[in-house]
Amino acid sequence: MWWIFALFSAFFGALTAILGKIGVSGIDSNIATAIRTVVILIVAWGIVFAVSDVRTIGTISRRSLVFLVLSGITTGLSWLCYYRALKEGKASAVAPIDKSSLVMVILLAAVFLDEPLTWKSIVGSILIVCGMLVTVLPISCG
Image (cartoon, rainbow, N blue to C red; front, side, top):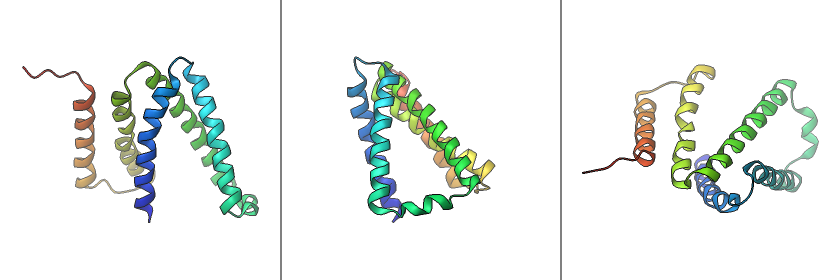
């Protein structure tokens, strides 16, 4: 089932770029990010109250809480940078660069999570970087 959620994540991520590009036009990118964050906050807590056992919040370990807070900080920084890039650049160029984070995840997971770097992940990462470069670099043929 995880891959279905991953596909939905990719689909909604694509919509995020298009809707965000339209929404950020004419306003400050930080304000756009703040509005988006409030909406995410409401939706996320709505889902928690609708389908999760809220009482389990008290059982979250200090370690998990620290890492979730750090993840939240890095998510916020990512969103601020993403919306600034969308405001100033083309969505079709910003999104491939943003998605190159996959290569960074593979490398960081190998270093910090002891996940294996396989020949498939290395070749895949090289192809992702090449695809990103082909997509965003101005290359003339002729």
